[in-house]
Image 1 (cartoon, rainbow, N blue to C red):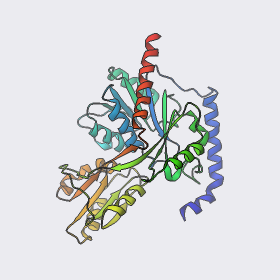
Image 2: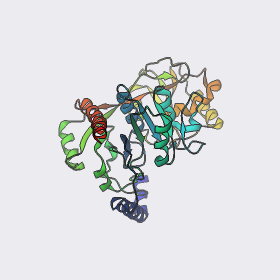
Image 3: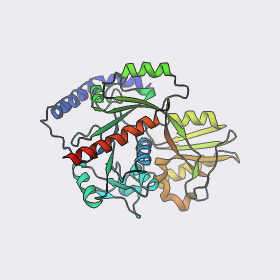
Length: 355
């Protein structure tokens, strides 16, 4: 019903698409300026409005690179209650820097997690305050062309490829399709479990990458849920009854997962990046009490977990568990992707020394 209704928005989508196309042309012709830093910048972005798996992909990249490099991440800090540049510290909360940067901060205490609306300003501030930094991963920066990253990665959801999508608001695209040609790597995310080599070939043909572009495919892999506060693990069993609470752009993969894993689940859905209120908490408790089973639990995403941590005193005794998620590269291509990341940094550093 929603998709049919959105076709009536095609005139607005056409206008929006023309505006974005013109803006890109101004950048391409250098009328609008893109700043280029003499420093390795890796951009993780997409063509659509959320739901492609940028956060777990950023985590994958950080997890790999921090073994050999000093890493920083830079995000806008969407829906935070502060403004300007900030680096996460021990007293930082999700309200200070946003849910996704807070998630990075909690997972990777040994890296620099920074936020700033103006990347052009924030990048020099990172390098000034953390001069040991060797690479910065830009979270969701593909459309923000005021800064030109040296290595661009775009993600596209298998169930909603940008090649089949329409411009917002008729569809989910926030950039014109030809912008994909600016990427170095295209990753098709959330592929089905039985994704075949034949389908891989067909999708590569549909994406029609340029000679320098690499295409990868990933599926979602869920880990063992852990308690929001004491971090005890609890395996999901087919006798469980679950209240799924989520404020993310696309909960479909989690719903599909639960359909296969548990006896019953009910979902309480909130908008993406939703800031939970005390009234929300009361409603969640009420819905949970309606489930009459000794094997019941509340399940939340990692992104939602950083926004619910403030309710520790109210939820500490509840079986509220966080479902971790990560990307799994298909066709044994994970190492190939890792090598592309490392090669970019090493080649960049080598060229810099020559200068």
